[in-house]
Length: 469
Image (cartoon, rainbow, N blue to C red):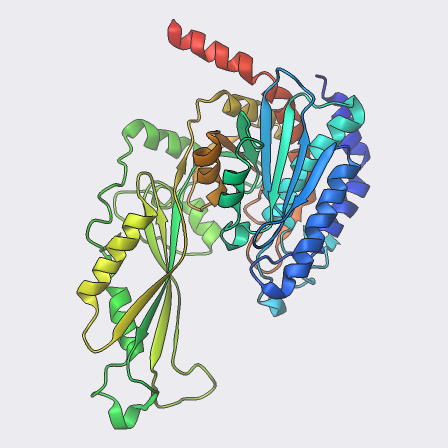
């Protein structure tokens, strides 16, 4: 199927497309905050209406225990592959509001950037697929493949409703492959195809001491301060850049020289990672590059510590309780439940008898590893080269997208991640932005991808013949 009419349609429709995207970004669809439940629901309805308007014949807003899932299908290409396109329309909280130079839900355009929470993560990246579908339907009245869309409203808060939804609708969601864009580019102008992501385990650690806050002058030196005990426990979790929990590395896969050389060719340098982080020097496990430390090696991060007095001036107090937010990033073949048990065992060893400790598991997701030899990666690589004018980098990512392992386990489909988020997009930070020229290259890439994916069956046959000979 020729793509030039679709590409021309996009070039001639940039102004209305940007207007639609601005409208989409203006919904404060913060799925994690109950005060925005109505905004999330309105955003889902807007998205469904938009999908109907561009020509998707079957669109539904499907309720879950929390936020609705938007489903849309175009299934008029018998004998062609079926692509399941995933995205999420919920966004991170905008805090701290005072750090934004534009209103977080204003959808303002300044220069070449559209500013707003979710502009890049994930409304803009998801919208690239939506606009590719529209361009093909407007110009060809048909898609080159069958398409099923699955857009959820809980990704930023753990996708808690998605797994039961996938189980209930497994047959309805059957596909040959899944595609999503919710990942970073390799550089400012080079897209990335991600083939591995780390899993996650998030915990809240609570340390309790005396039954009430105490005067530190009267009791200091006699009663163990929960903040001090917590600090000692946290300090026991690392040694020489490695996680010091017994058994933590038992299931970590050892990657050989070939894979590490491939990563070195495609991945960022230490200097690039330090520049992106705004840091002067790295830290972590010896014997690995910074890119390797964030992808093929696991990590434990202390995300926050709270307790005691934090107001102006001083207060002579021993607090009754202290908390820490702890998160693990896990690699194949680590199991989050096993790591949770190892962490609990470690706490029993290091917690002093002067305090009591409790752990609440907030979230867990398994790591994901995708066979980059699958034909869908050939289609994706072709599309990136045509859409951006340069080859995509094949990357591992240190982050976690729960849906990848869910789709693999429940639907048995490989997932291709087309990364359109520029390194300067400031996702999860104030002044999140979407670079509009990059967005339109992303739309073109998605048009090429859907077209190239129509040949996946032939690619699969070619690969089988290669192995046979």
